[in-house]
Image: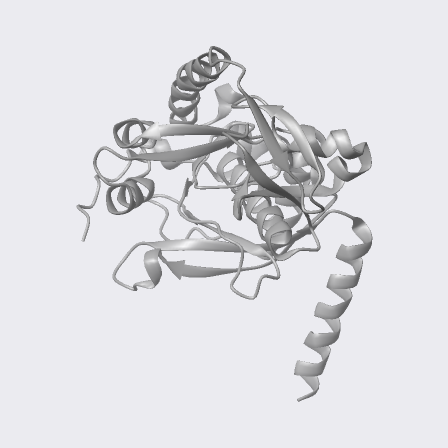
Length: 311
């Protein structure tokens, strides 16, 4: 079992006053907890270096093979799946959510690293919807962090693959503090602003030591890093807006691909599902690339609830 990291200082987990007063508004960086500024400062330095190093790489030609056998020329560490999609049609690029490179799921905005077979996935595929909801969970996490100044724990798509959730720790001094249904509307307003900003998802490779430093104010991320990342190995983090989260990805190109978002329910849970651990607040949600799909989904949920009520 990994060594338990020290709990964050109380002032790090309190929601900033500016966030509480403007419940549906996106706060400025200055109004967010200090750990947000710490992460962003590290990110700026490391991401800039990563991209500068990539730009220095030689333009080596690569061949990308599409599912129909067509071959497209590209440049190693430069050409992205999204660029290939746009080369086929702008319409295709707008509806793709993730790529598969030699069978491995891959960010559409991540440069290709050699000759490969490329598949472009839409929302209606298993990989496409899973990635879409995974990215939407990060958007939910961004809103939760901005609204409450909480420590995020995990935020995956649900096992039934019909949405996603994010767990958040409200602080060592937050006994009795819960997220309730009355908070849903304010969170959804914040998420609509996140969608409107079309925040890009950016990927950063980190050493274990860099990850531990970046997330030093979040004891849950510390535990994950110590348990999952071997000494000498690397891991990845993703950014959208002010949220920087430890994550293996992949993600959609930007928050703008989400056209409909609804928070569906909330509950209390325990970190790692163990009652001996900290209590966390779990918020469930669902999202879609168009409003019609959301309308149909909510109709099915309502009909299912009515059937359960009649039993």
